[in-house]
Figure 1: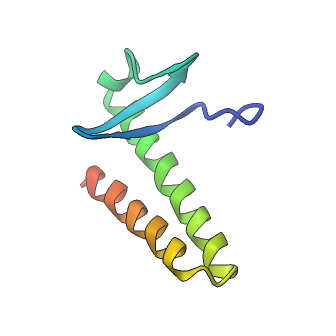
Figure 2: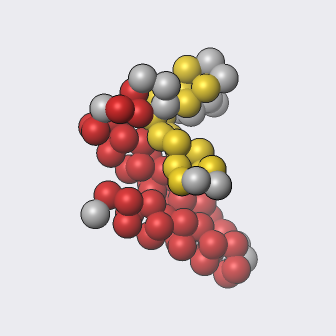
Length: 80
C-alpha cells in the first residue's frame, strides 16, 4: 500500500485471476508475465485475506472470517 492505494495484488475475474502491479486504473499489464511479480501478487493477496479473516474472527463474525480464510486458501493453491 502506498497512500492507501494497493501497489500489487489481484482481481478475481470470471475466467481467473488477473495479477500484478497496479498502474493507474489497471493491474497486471506487462508485469503479469513475470513469474516473480505473479508470485508476489498472490502472496500479498494471501496476507490481506488472512488479516481480514482475523479481524472478522475477533469481531465474532464467523461467516465473514470463513469467507476470507477460504479466499486465502484459494490464492495459496495458485502458488502450488
